[in-house]
Each structure stands twice: as structure tokens, then as C-alpha cells.
Image (cartoon, rainbow, N blue to C red; front, side, top):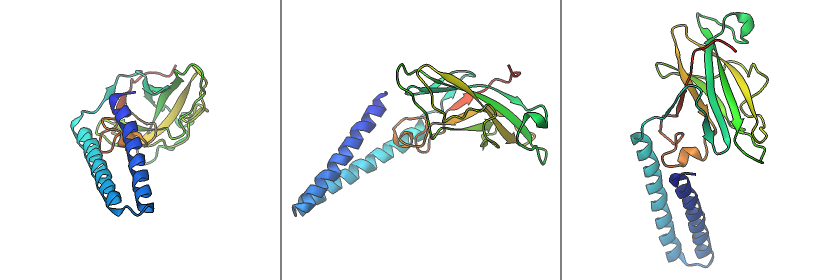
Length: 207
């Protein structure tokens, strides 16, 4: 947990406490107190939102090396390789209008010691060298999905196909663990207006 994560948790407590104080003051007819608390709470939320956006615009984008593991608490993933599908039998996506199908392998693992877990909102996009991003054109080819349950210390590989224009060259995988609460945490990779972290990929043959 980073300092910004802790600050977010404290901010949540402050907002809920302030909202409760406003409600109690209103119920008791203390309108002056309720208005004062509303002003303080509104100012705090506005300043916090401004801080989220300012840090998002100032901080540089984060890049991970090919195969480097990225963790969200105890749930981790690494972009292992990306390769061009060699024939139609190898890919569930049609290569129409000159498009090409690329296959990306993502290694999902858990560093938890006791707890089973999953990332139900996890999703991946393939980004090309121009910055355009593409969603998978079909479901996982490995039988596992990013949202599958993981036991302590377990891992599995997810194989996802992506259809890109013929001239596009993959630059890396953008992994989304979920929009909340990362979108509203100051300095987070997935915070509002901040470019998402890019996990660079290695071009390799299939194992």
C-alpha cells in the first residue's frame, strides 16, 4: 500500500464522516452547521479531484519490461509474448480486409499465501506503436480467462487473440484490473486522465 492509497482511505472516511455529520445536523434542525459542513466537504472533494487530475497530467506513463510481473495487491499478471497467428486454424478471429491476428500470452499469478482470489473486472487491450488500442476479437484460446479464480501461489496462462490493421505493430499490453478505486487514487497508474501503464511484449515463438 502506497502513501496515496492510505490517503484515499482516509479521504473516504472523511467524506462518509462529513456526510453523516450533515445528515445529523439536518435532522436536528441545525441548518447553519449543516451548511458549514457541506461547504467544507464540497471544498475537500473539489481539491481532491483537482489533485487527482494534476498528478495524472504531470506524472509520466509507467512501462514494464517484457515478462515483468505487475501486481495489484496479491493478484499479478505479466505479458509473456505476442506473436502473429500463422494461419486461420490457429486463430478464432477472421483476418478480413487485410487485418492481421496477433496472439498475446498473459501469465496470471497469485502471491497470496492463504486466500483464494480473482479479478472479476480484469481485461486486456493490445496497444500498437501508434498508441491505438484493441480489445480481444474472441475469448481466451487457453481455456482460462483473466477473471478466473486463483489459489494461493497458483498461476495460469491466458491466450488472447487481437485483430489489428495489417500495418500495425504491437507495442505492449494494457492491463485493466478494474476502474475503481484506481481511477480516483492520486498518482495511480489507472487514475483519471493518466495514461495506463504499458506492459511491453517480446516477439517470440510459441513454447
